[in-house]
Length: 201
Image (cartoon, rainbow, N blue to C red; front, side, top):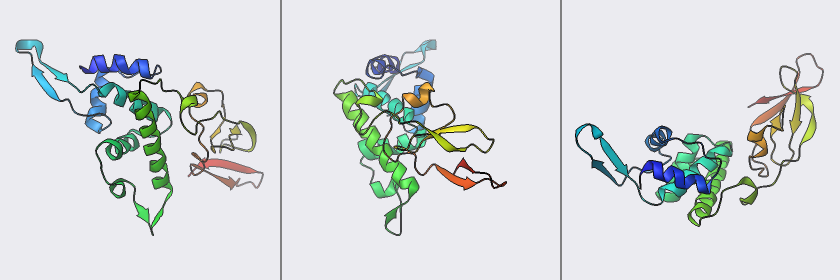
């Protein structure tokens, strides 16, 4: 299977996929996707053709879906190492005084999201936020707090997400998982003493 064929197959599993072959090769270099099983030399000016396992399409779909849930490419790559390469969890998710800290908790959620997405993609299921475990729609409420610049904010008390325009597709299509964004923001009093602002930690 070539990378172009894998992307086309992955799009059937995750219709929102926008990945191109050049970006997919970058994902491979960053650890989000596996290296090719073999590289065929075509000769002359034709260059080389990389061949991948049939599992690549499911891995592309899982990686793309997981990044769409707000996780960084580094977090997705680390999740893949744990799920597919058997890397010890302690090597990727550090502990502080024997307890999970905020970064580690986010990684645990990334691993869970990636593993669920990969299993569903391998089974031929279409990836969609509403069908993933723990995914529900956001419960938007008008927040009494604002951004540092004074913009009105909406808040989802279920996952902890804040946004000035919650109807954005990038948020409405993102899974609402209980407590997922609770540690991303902090509420602090305004310097003028009138109300509070929300800012990224």
